[in-house]
Each structure stands twice: as structure tokens, then as C-alpha cells.
Length: 284
Ligand SMILES: C[S@@+](CC[C@H](N)C(=O)[O-])C[C@H]1O[C@@H](n2cnc3c(N)ncnc32)[C@H](O)[C@@H]1O
Image (cartoon, rainbow, N blue to C red; front, side, top):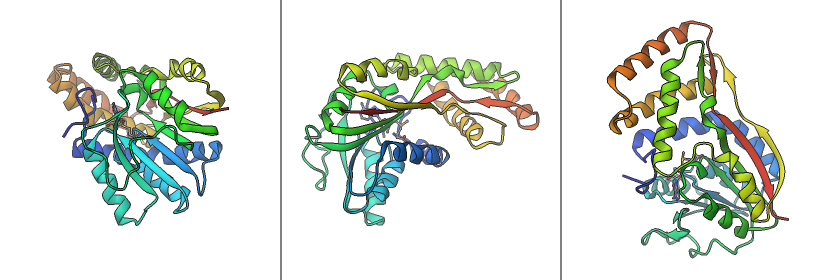
């Protein structure tokens, strides 16, 4: 199961489950961002790069049956999962569309019967939610253009992306973690992504006519048993086999990583997350 040749994290069942755990950990911050942007009942919201749709289901709950959520991704297995969830929860307000955000084209015949035509724009959407997606795209400007055209005047975008991925650290020590972080960055850049994409987005969004309403840091620093520290440890565990398969992570690297993690669980260690930022933008 693949999302497309360039999607580096893949769409295995294990990755789907990790995205679910990840959403639970970040859910309060996510809901706070939506509240700040004024997302609410009756609105029409796009979820771009929705993955298996853990956030899209929350958005559908928020807008209610009087609203509409269109969840967009190019990974059909993820959208199939989301559709089943939406059917189980009786959420007719939630539709999915298989769409390549790099090219702005529907993928094969992936459009679902309950989805609108592939005309996301112009459609006067009240809001757009987009998290951890721009960093994987070869052409983030295509995404920005789509957002700028999709929003109605006064409509708002909530973005969660990293401005610097290698603030990810285990302190003290953490040499193998630091090496792992650099391997991830190299792996994603080699597939056309940019893990520090948050640095380029403000200029792109402004160029396409959007205005920054507010921003806040979501960088966290926690003890080893804090939820965001556990999120980082989950990622180290889930992603090391992929780095190894790509020939970037040796059994020796893995051994060193594990020997760092053992004492980190006992000692008073700090886990620092990649520098994630929330940005809320508006189409004037
Ligand atoms: C890390 S996941 C984030 C999923 C979701 N936004 C979340 O916060 O849980 C990145 C998502 O981007 C999607 N993606 C990557 N490249 C894409 C593309 N070219 N077009 C559409 N979706 C893409 C992947 O399929 C995946 O679902």
C-alpha cells in the first residue's frame, strides 16, 4: 500500500495506528487552534492531506450535520479507512476525495460517489486545516495556491508545520537520537520534501494574498514519561525500520539508540520536540 512514489512515511497499518496515537497526543492543541480560527457548527472545512482522518472526524463532529468537511489525500487506503469510520459514526457531512496535492489532480478514478466533483476551487470554503503535509510535497506552492483559491473572503487556514525539525533532542546525551534526526531530514529531503517547510510558508502564503492573523509555538520540552516525549519515542521506534530499509540506519546505529533510550527512561532527561508552529491565516 503506497500513497504515491514520493510519500516517504508510507501508509502501512502500523503507520496508520501511529497517526492515530499522534492525533490523540496533539488533539487538545489542534482543537485550540480551530477555536482560535473560529471553526464551528455549520461551516464548510477542507482537510488537506487528511491521512486516515483522525482530525477530519473531529472536524466533522465540530461542524455538525449542517456543515461539511471534505477530506483530501492521495493515499487511497487512508481514505478508505476514513470512509468506514464516517459511515460507522453516521456522518453524512464528511466526504473524501483522492487528490494529488503536488499536481492538483484527482488520482486515477479515485473520486468517491459521495464526493463533489474534483472542483475544490473555487468553492468558497470557510476554513482549511492542514497539518504535517506541506513538508512532504515537492511543490508546496501548488498547495498554497489551492488554499488561496479555495477559501472565501474572510475564510481561515490553520496550519501546523515545523520551522526547524532538528530541535528534536534528548538531553543529556542523545548522540544516536541526533544522528537519527539528521538521517530523517536527509531521507525526506531526498524524496523532495522539506522538514523545515514552515520557514518558507509565510512568504508563499503572503504572495498568494493571505494575511497572517496569529501564530504560536507548539514546541514542547518534557520528561521522558510526558505525552509528547512518548510521541517522540514512538516515532523513533516506528521509523527506524524504514531508515534501515533505505540503507540509512545500521544495526549498530540501532544498538546505540537503544542503549541511549534505556538510561533516558530512568534518568531525569529532557525530550525536546521538533519546532512545530501553528499559523492562522485569513483570505482578506
Ligand atoms: C504525516 S501524514 C499527516 C496526516 C494528517 N494531516 C494528520 O495530521 O494526521 C501526511 C499525509 O500527507 C499525505 N500526502 C503526502 N503527499 C501527498 C500528496 N502529494 N497529495 C496528497 N496527500 C499527500 C499522506 O498521504 C499522509 O496522509
